[in-house]
Length: 163
Image (cartoon, rainbow, N blue to C red):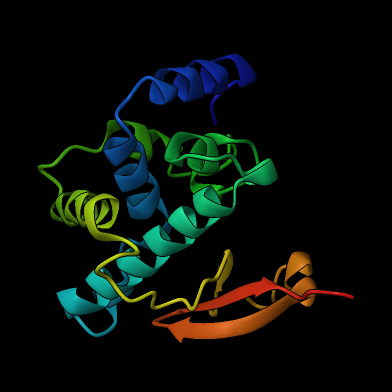
């Protein structure tokens, strides 16, 4: 596990990268391997697209999430792949386009930044949250969500509006 200082340096270095790269790394960190059960790369693509849409939905809303891709992806506690304790954080830091799943994530990020939401349907129905269905139980925060979509091994939700 990275030290807090190492983690801080990594996050600061990432903030200097282009948004497409930050989005691609986050998509890869959160949604790679979706097609491993079906061995269908389309499942990977759809899962990556859905996770990317959640990121851009958050950026559009702004607020505490942040108003842009780096803010949404790299602000503390947003996505588990960037947590200091994530066992795959060093892979996330070091991955290159030689990895086919990262190359796909980069392509998805490029498509999303160019065409979403104008020319792409939102597979998540405006979701701002998701979690993996294979978890033994939903995260605590899911109790405040309304499920709006299910894509692959993820459930997608929006905060329940209270009057």
